Image (cartoon, rainbow, N blue to C red; front, side, top):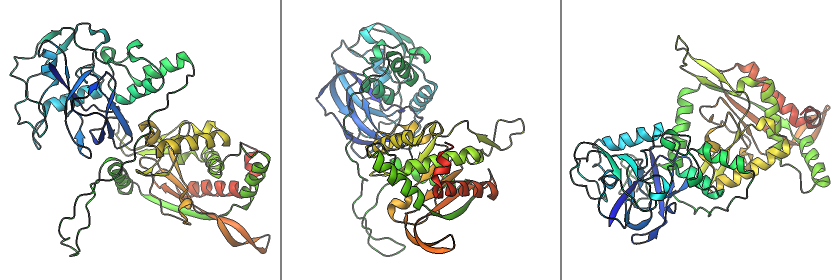
Length: 479
């Protein structure tokens, strides 16, 4: 039996680590090519990792809750064969001991980022045709816990011809791309990759979907809920003298959120403006639409999003990014403006706060925005939102009123330049036409990067959105 080890790949976004949530197979199980073997949580999403090999599971490298580095062994698969080939020798190796350098792992990452066909050792051409592969020198560092046995010493790297091997997956670097193809019924074996050495990219799968027209997607398996790993109590805290109840590692999504918020507060000189708004007319308008179109009335968030997009069309400075260093000849700072708006909105999930974005939201009406908000919210809560959906926003809308609060000094979603917050809508006394009345009031809060604009622009945008909420009919007539 020959054994090959599949290394944890970069999941398509340049990430360097992932948390192993759960194994989907056990030692001794028979698996097929493209079968999901593990579920991992990256800093951006929860994904299933498929195996590029068919055979019997020989070893699982890691336990649930453990954080694995990209390029480290994930799973070893035994397949019927005639012995250890040069390909096997290159794929099976021992992970270096903690704290030691990993030149092969670093080379793996560099190849992966470059789109090389050598990234996932074992991802070959279908049909068992002979292919040329490079072998690597064996590592001499001490093996880490749970690593595969070190192969015997090899001569200097040579170009080896690999004989027929058991079925292997097509050349594809990313489990996310493979999942996209699987859920849409696209056979990777039928695609000609446009990447280096025939590597199949996301664009190849999307092109195949466009060519085939709209097709019904297979319903993906529901992702199990995850929870933070807590360590056992460990004595008392030296600063407070209190007993330590638990220690929760900061990793995965929470680690990324922490880094992003820290970068925002550390680098953005933010300023805040706010205004009280009478939302009575907007609520009455929506209630009237609801009576006439009970099954096709956009939610309140969709109307607010439409007003924000109209405001950004008049004040595009807020839909921009400040770049401290640019590629200009003088290397000075620059402001990058966008042709279009990817409107992000904050969504609370069991995994934490995420910000999916509606791509080219500026091209949609209120009904289109409502459909996308509902779709992205459900996807984010199920842990199925893609990295692109979670990282491509240009401006964020945050409805923290759902938590029963009136206002918030929100933190800008770095590297964006502004975020608009909406508080709860409640009955308050308000003066209308010189008389005191009870109205449906809310508070709008705009936090913006003072480097991209001054208070006049920020105030103008905020006042425009507030006026749209107070007089929705006049604004909607122009949209």
